[in-house]
Every structure is written in structure tokens, then in C-alpha cells.
Amino acid sequence: MFTGIVEELGTVAAVEDQGDAIRLTVRAATVLEDAALGDSIAVNGCCLTVAERTADTWTADVMQETLDKTSLRGVQPGDRVNLERAVTAATRLGGHIVQGHVDGVGQVLSRTPSEHWEVVEVSLPPDLARYLVDKGSVTVDGVSLTVVGAGADRFTVSLIPETLARTTLGHRAPGERVNLEVDVIAKHVEKLVRAYTGQEHQ
Image (cartoon, rainbow, N blue to C red; front, side, top):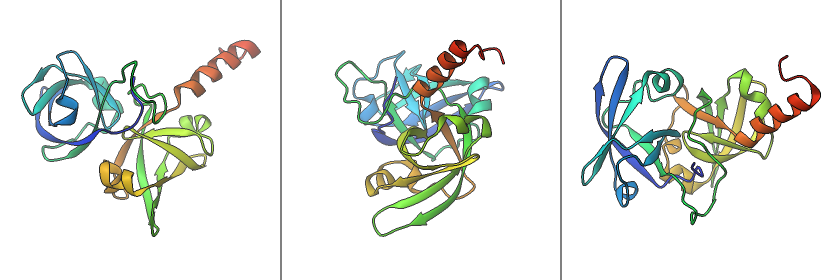
């Protein structure tokens, strides 16, 4: 589990194509301070497992399922990526509950800069729209954000200077793909309500 508070920007050091998977190596510092084999680290919101590590890099196996459903397909050496270690019992929950399980991929539609922040509009797969509400939470590329406006096929968020400077969202251009994870609590509530009202299998 994660909180959507990015700890550092890592750099993709290598991508080994294995046909139905890739072996992804990321150069980092902060997330490697206590990383051990088998630990979980979120990369742009995708929970990956540390399979190898050196003093300044770590490697994970990314399966076909992940490549098919996230923006990690097409990642190249030199790309910057958002990194966050899994939470511990002593971690501050500064964002919201994030699983690292991407629900869909959207695209940056527009960016509207202001003096102290920037409003970013992102496309949304229609089947995810029901989980977003104004002032609710959404995860974009692993970053916990508050929804400004939720629509049927898009939503907007406001990015403060800290987010612009410390995450990939500071330079995502219109047309670029981003990983989306909706609030897991909303999904659980929906299932419970459907079961209670007899609509679970409709």
C-alpha cells in the first residue's frame, strides 16, 4: 500500500525487452535507503517488486498484464519516473490510500498555468467516471491529487509548485499518457451497495 506522496524522481537506467515482459532498471537514491529484495516500490503508480539492486539502481520484472494496462509500455532509458516506497505502520498518510494497482490510462488534455499553480485536464476512461467526485481523491502517475472538477470522460486537478517541481506531472505535455487509480474505498462501497440492493449481478 502507498499514499501517493512521491518520494523522489528516479531515472530509467535500462529496459530489457523479454518479449512478453520487460526488465526495468531504475536509478534512485531515497527509495534505496532501506530497500531489500522483495520490497514494493511504486513506479508512476505501478506497484513493482525489487528483484535486484545495486548501490544506486534497482530492477523489477514488469509482466505483460502491466504493460497492457499501464503507461510503462514504451518507457525508455533516461525517462524520469515517480517513485514511492510502500508505507509502514509509522508512515504519515499524507495523501490517501493507494494500492499501486492501475485502473486505467488517461491522457493529459490541457495545461492552464496560473501565477502560483497549474490546472491540468486529464482524459478518463468512461467506466471510471463514477468513482470520481469533486474534491475527492485520484491518483495520477502515482501522485495523490484532489479532483477539482469531475466529468463523464475527463477531470481536472490543480498542481501546486511542490507537485510541479517534484513529480513527472510538472512536465507531462498534452497527449502524454498517465496512469490512473481511483479511490479503492469508492469501489468497495459500490460493491456493497449493489449487493445490498440486489444489483450485484446486473
